[in-house]
Image (cartoon, rainbow, N blue to C red; front, side, top):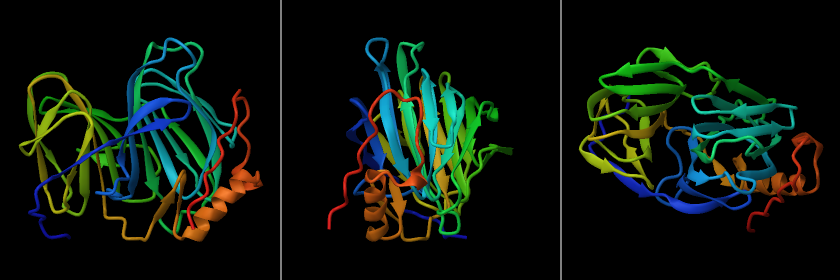
Length: 296
C-alpha cells in the first residue's frame, strides 16, 4: 500500500487541439505536467459542438497499437467503424471499448440522422506488456451500472465503484466513472489508497476536497487517499478516472503506444505503407489519415 500523499492537488490546464476534420477539443492527457493517471494515457473533452450543419464529426480511418480506446458521450451520436468489421452507433450512457493490441484501424463520424449537439470524451488506456500485442477486439456496452450516492449519480464506465462493476474488459487495475450532480450536493466518495486519481469537468463546476474545478482543467490527486469530498452548488458533470500507477516505461506518438522509439517509427511507416496487420475500414466515404513520422 502506498503511504498517504500529503501534496496538494495539482490543476493542469488542458490544451486546445483539433480532432479529425476540424473539431476543436480540450486535451488534458498527456501534457508536459502529467503523462498518465494509472494506465490512462490520453483524455480529450470535445464539445458541446453544433453539428446540425455540415458533416459534423469526421475522423477518417487511422491506426492504433498497444492501447484501448474508450468513447463516452454526454450528447449526440457517433458512428464507429473498424477493421474487425464492427459498425456501431454510440449514444449517451453507452460505452465503446476498442482494444488495439498488435494493430487495428477505425473511423469515427457523425451519422446522417443526428442530434444538433455533440459532446463527450475520448480516453486511451495503455496496455501492459503482457497484453500490448494481443489480438484486436471491440466491445460495445449498452447498459452500464448506474447508482446513486449522497445526491450524486454515478455511471460506472470502467472498473468497480461503490460495489458495482462495469462489464468492460480492461487489463489493468482501473476506474472510470461519470459523476452527475443534478443540483446542489455535498458527498463523500471512497477511494482506493493504492490508486492515483484525476477529475475533469464536462459541465459547469464543482469543488473536490475544497479545490474548485471548472471546465478546461484536469485535477490530479496523489495516491494514498481514502476518500474524496465533492461539493457543487448547482448541476454539474465530471469524469473521475483512476488506477494503480502504471509502472512500465511507455512512449506515445500520434495514435500509437509502444516501448521504444523504433517501435513507434515502424508503426508509422507500416501504416503509411498499407501493412496488412492494421486491416481495412470499409464504408467510410473519406480519405484515411496519414501517420506523421516521429522525429529522429
